[in-house]
Length: 129
Image (cartoon, rainbow, N blue to C red; front, side):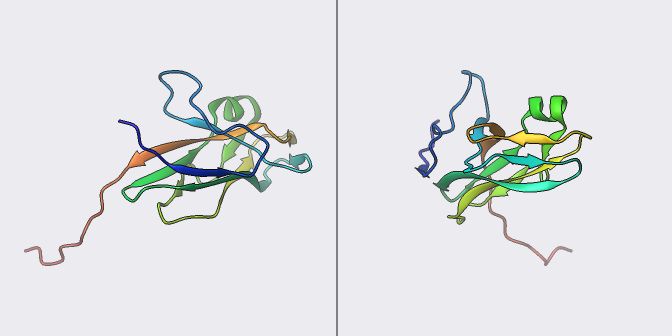
């Protein structure tokens, strides 16, 4: 099944896409005017230039890229971060540097991935005996 999601891309980067046929996540890229350095144990919000309209019943999950985590200690701080279907602002990625070394991010660098997931809405039943 394929879900259609409206997207606006104000960056100069390509739209997120699946790297391989079996990929579940699409890479998100940094949208920067100037390079950004994240120092050891520092967190920074990185813009993507992407605005999306997720259908009701779905969410976007922002996750770390395993290569960045393994090789550089860069992780998404609230991994996975959730993008609700009613959010219309720019997708921004909260990155944390867990290494001892500074990490340089340039425009277009792949910094995280997004996965879309269906979810159910619940109602509480507080009349349980």
